[in-house]
Length: 135
Image (cartoon, rainbow, N blue to C red; front, side):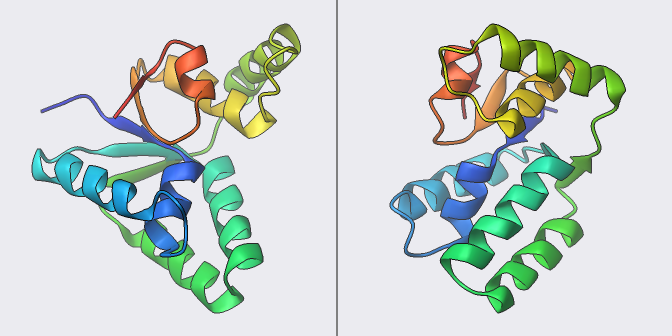
């Protein structure tokens, strides 16, 4: 089995929002990942950010449907970062003040380190700045 792929807000919003500039590319990438039976890890932070962005850009109905879909999808594991991950995220946030990372990004990086993940499904260049490969 292949290494799980971190699933970021940028990819989730692109998949779930047909008007997103990356929608077609996201659907193709997701299809390719599912073809090789990829599993995904994301965080409660990414879940919250995704639902909120869809709420703001599309509608409450679509945001709720997206949340249900993400929570029920068997190939996605949604993890709740613990104190150690939050502490590492804060260190990243403080250290890389020149990169304009969101705190959610920093939590994602910390969780990726914690789970020894090297690839992220995202359109956010910040992941490559931190040395992760894009899926």
